[in-house]
Amino acid sequence: MSRPRTRILVYVGKGGVGKTTMSAATGLHLAKRGVMTLVVSTDPAHTLGDLLGRPVLGEITRLAPNLEALEINPYREIERRSKEILRYLRHLMAGRGYHDMMIQELLTFPGVDEIVSLMRLKELHADGRWEAIVVDTAPSGGALKLFVLPEAAHWYMNKIYPGEKKLLLLLKPLADRITASALPDAPVYDALESLYGDLVDIKDILKDRKTTSFRLVLTPEQLVLQESMRVYAYLSLHGFQTDCVIVNKDRGALPRRNGSPGESVSEKIRETFPDLKILRLEHARRDPTDRQVLLGFAREVYRQADPLRVMSRTNPIEYEIDGGGIKLFVRMPGLRKSELKLHTHNRHLVLEARNVRRIVPLPDSFSEYQADGARLEGGILRVDFKPNVIRKLHP
Image (cartoon, rainbow, N blue to C red; front, side, top):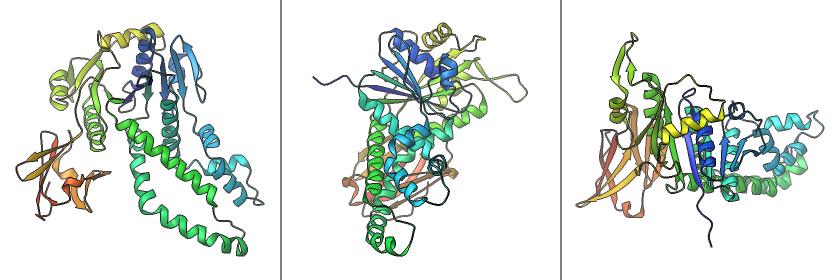
């Protein structure tokens, strides 16, 4: 008999809005309901252990019946997963005064935290012992880098890597004779390909709407709301499902610049996220390091709802047959037309929004179609495709 599906709940949002608090509260709430739960932090700041009152860095730690927690330690993950790469670096640096700690530092290049966090998430999901994995992420920018990394790796491994690997393996025998700097050997490339395979697997897991739900945490502040709109747009752009918005410290109204009450939070957030479930936690001066207080937060937010159920069912990217053409819809709330750039290339739709790019592979059914215009209305980008029509896109 197949095991029950492990649900993954990913809390995202701007720094300081309460992602760690909600992650810990949800974990405690699920455990209290008898759900075997793991709370994982991918945030390099590592405040999950402080909140839960136990060190959990690098080790899965049991905190209560049905509840375990882990803060991912990049250094430990690199050592555990990159033995062949470390072997190569040790050989390359032999006799040059580099000790192991310095060599490990060479592997902590920008982006490696995201890589090893994804590797560990894939491993934890495959383990099968938890019914729920609750993920506390880094602030918005770091979280987005984490989740779009598999697509960047896909582009490199398909476009650049094959030729590079073939060339370097051909040159290796010659290079070994004429230079002291050895080129990577086959096991090093095997290790890289294994890492890439894990990235592909976790990408599929995170985009499976029955498995993974992204939950956007925000506070009732204008700047936070604006950034939250962009986070939701970027997640939708990359095909990740956001199923609810959690308003932390809900004061009932967005403050105006002079500090007086402004527009109703409910109205503004409903207008901004019309298709998402809105959950609320009222502002209260309570110590979040108290587990009973955390449980109270979760009960207030979820009330009678099961945190594991999908709160809203939206498709970030949809297609529709319309007469002789096809329409593609991408949810991109909060973005202006001036921030978007689009073009098609080799049956791919390339979307750019500020500093984020997404290459959307088009289905085989699009092979006889060309993009024939685009427009952004109500937070939804619509791209029209018509048979044998070639026209520059004007979003």
